[in-house]
Image (cartoon, rainbow, N blue to C red; front, side, top):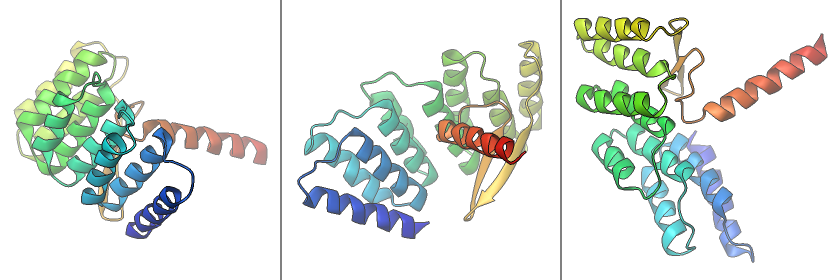
Length: 203
């Protein structure tokens, strides 16, 4: 994965050396690449470069990349502070990203705060209950885990969503059926749509 990050950095440097200036989309691309390659310092440098040198105001997408890269690195307090200090209104996805990182690193109190924000911003998003329940269960807080499952049922959500875990390059990703809290949920759903179309064409 680091090879792809290095390639993204190389291409970005070529862009800067040309007559073209990096734009909003260019920075999303390089921040995402740095995120998945674990290049924390590079991501921080690009985030500052965007605002200070190119005068591009970061959007919620840029902030989401940074929160995710900080969370993956275990810098949960810094990630939460970034959410609270950013000039744009946070959405359920960015809080969901922090919630996922809290599960990985076992920060129960922060997970509770993040889940609360997700529920306030998107009351119909059931995956936050499952993720918080899993945070509790992973650290033997079984009573609290059960309470989250009961809260899910009390909200009369149609069906308790299924949950699956996959490991990619040593990193565990958690997916909840119908959930849209994963930082790349839009890309995932687009890929699924493309796959579905390809399967239909194959008969």
